[in-house]
Amino acid sequence: MKYLKHYDDKCTACGACMTACSKTFFKEDDPARSCIRIEAAGEGGRIVVCDQKCRLCVVECPVQALTVSRQGVVVLDRRLCVGCLACVAVCPIGAMRFHPGLKNPFKCIACGACVGKCPTGAIEIAVEGEE
Image (cartoon, rainbow, N blue to C red; front, side):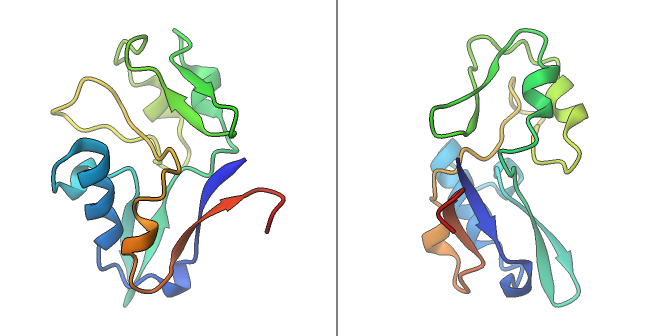
């Protein structure tokens, strides 16, 4: 299973990962539309991102718009999604995101766009079982 591994102790809350994510995922520089979120904590940050293991969102989706890919990543089929936000409500860590300007919720798909932009190495792509 592919996922975004993170090290909160290395995070400086600079936001470079959020900018990279929004530019890649939505083609605009808007951290509010980032699949990864940083919660400032003291001098650093706490990285909030889907761990791909919980899968409560997949179970909760009434139209089966959320599925698990061959790589073990939870993905959303925007064509099937009705925008009910049940997945957002059930996510225990707030990794399933919603922005008022968008019809569908969104989440990290472990694409890795943020990894190369993090100046401290606080995030990396990992594959479960290869750590």
